[in-house]
Structures are given as C-alpha cells and as structure tokens.
Image (cartoon, rainbow, N blue to C red; front, top):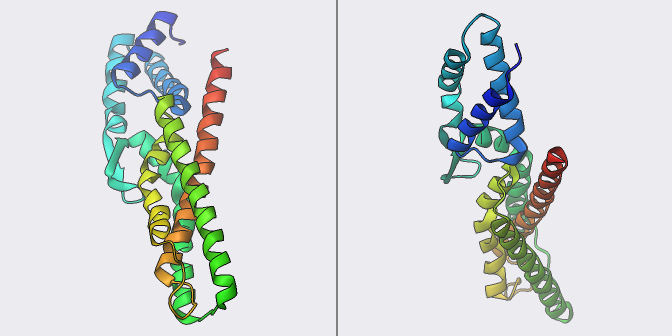
Length: 219
C-alpha cells in the first residue's frame, strides 16, 4: 500500500525534527522509512501504528556515535558515521603511509644534498607547502560558508586540524639538517600535510557533486 502525500510529509517532518539534513542521505533514508511503513501497512497495521513502530526501529540509527578514524571528538548520527567510515578507510591508509613511509625511509637511508641545491629545494618545498595550506584553508571556508551538510562535509570537518602538518614545516622553514639530509620528522609532517590536502580536495569535489545531484533531483 502506497502512502499518501500527507503521510509522506509527516515522515519528512519527522526527519526535520531529528535534524537529519544530510542531502546525500536524506532521500535514501526517506525511501527506506516509507518502505518499512508500507510493509507494515500491507499487514493491516494503521499508518499511525506503523509509523510509531518504524520510528522506534530507526531510533538507534539516529543516535550520535564517533569513530577513531575521525577522532572521538567528532560525533554524528550512526547513519552518517557508518557511511563516512566506508568511504574514508582507503584514505586513512593513504594518510598513514604518507607520514610513516618517508620517516622510515629517511631513518634507514641517508640522502645527502649539496649546498648549491639545498636553498632551491627548501624554497621549492616551502612554496608547495604554502600553496597547499592556502588551498585547504580555502576549502574550509567554502564548506563552512555553504552550510550544506553531506557525508563528505562531515569527513572534511574532521580533517581541518590536519593543516598543522603543513604549518609545522612552514614555521621550521628548513627541511634539512646540518649534514644536508632531509629531516625525517619534518618530511613526515610535510607528506602528511600533502595527504591532507589531497583528501580535502577529493572530498570537497564529492561534496560539490552531491549538492549538484540534489539540485537536479529537486528540479
């Protein structure tokens, strides 16, 4: 049995009261709830009883949880966090590899640069780092100002503190030690910062695509 327009509107109002306004998930969750209610209506339950039972069933999915993938300080509804984890897992591995692999490599292998090239490399790395920092700050400002929530904007919000990995090498200004070797720790920070920049770029692009898809859906 299909729901009436008024009944569907009641479900939409329920989602609004739950403050579930993630546009990439809203339609999907609405369809699931409608389907659950229709299944109960086919068993001769009234809409009011079916809606009440479905609300109880879905309550656990709207509870806020956190994950070590993003940091325990970032919490959101279980639906959002579960999808975010599924999307973010490969990027978490990229993030770890970007930091630890250069550190491990430079701790075990010594690469010495002569003085003539040190100044150029320092300037080159600082320039790339500065542009990466500016770009990440640009993304942060754009996402905050848009006020549109998606799973991707939640992921982005958890990455903002990662700019510290770009700021530390810039404050240092020198990526080499006195012997002309790349500083293992600062290089790890640097590549970790580049990973954060790539992750922010990727999910900002996905965030914009989700907004466009939602607009097309409304039209």
